[in-house]
Length: 156
Image 1 (cartoon, rainbow, N blue to C red):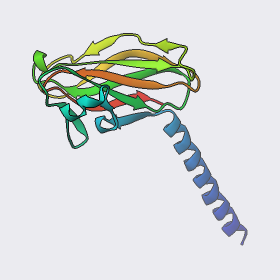
Image 2: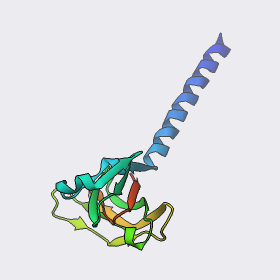
Image 3: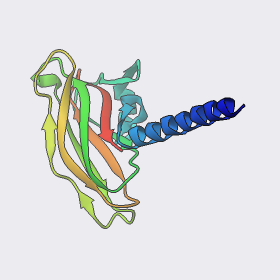
Image 4: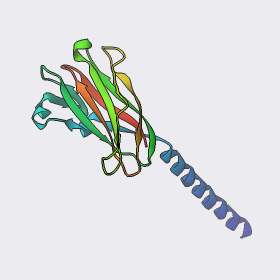
């Protein structure tokens, strides 16, 4: 009987430890947001973004802007990267991230970055960004004709 109680306590404790370790890993991780969560900055440009498997491709003949909201759990510095594709320099993707406070009285925009190469999909590493407590974070991309945005990856 005593052995059975110890065994059950041991299993219960193991379960609690497993759940606690999962919570820590989840908080220390990152999120991936599909491009389909974003929208054209100018509403009339929405028809210029063709969607396939949550990837948005600029199907128009001029540069169009796309904005993607990013959910953050804590204030602080965030690493952000955009997975995108440009068939050539004429189909480039240029992105930036913007962090704000809740009142939108502080805005942090450390600059832009573009595709490191053309052809296959590539990660665009954006400059680290700061988000204040209760603030907002979003990625904005200028997508040239034929360019495509797949996902945005960011810290929690």
